[in-house]
Amino acid sequence: MIVIEHNSDFNFTDIRAIAEEVWPKTYGTILSKQQLEYMMNMMYSVASLQTQANEKQHHFILAKENDVTVGFASYEYDCNGTNKTKIHKIYILSNQQGKGIGKLLLDYIANEAQKYNNKALFLNVNKYNPAQHFYKKLGFEITKEEVIDIGQGYVMDDYVMEKTIN
Image 1 (cartoon, one colour):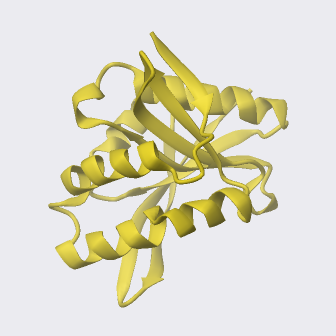
Image 2 (cartoon, helix red, strand yellow; image 1 turned 180 degrees about the vertical axis):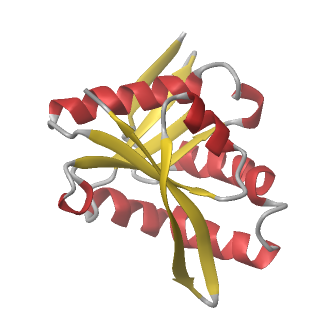
Image 3 (cartoon, helix red, strand yellow; image 1 turned 30 degrees about the horizontal axis):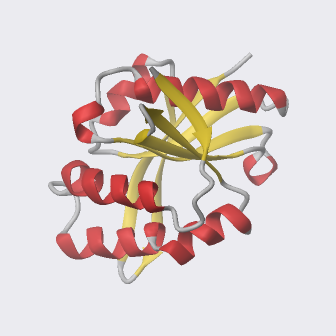
């Protein structure tokens, strides 16, 4: 049985391990090795994750099966004053994908967002990431395209996807 719990590890050990396993498989054919390394350091260093949690108010949750972390997500209520919750990250170990864990994480976030009277969930997904089909299956729709400069000459070329919640 999958249990969702809040991350309490200030070194983000499980989150970093999952990102290190999943990111090369997800983005290895989409991004250059240099951009992949740059983004991993930019988003998943301990200092960066601590800043996201402590200063940017990102909430990190873990999906665990038999006390083993198999996935994680992070989200932010009322992102930029929009009354919408932004899902910043959601990743599942490769050998655990397709088991409904991603849906459990998204459902958990939707339930939490409703407690804060947020009216929708939204996220960015790389235009070439097959995960966009997973999001569409769960009711997310593409609302716009976005190219975000992330420094060092790199950009994120994304779709913004959104789902209304009741």
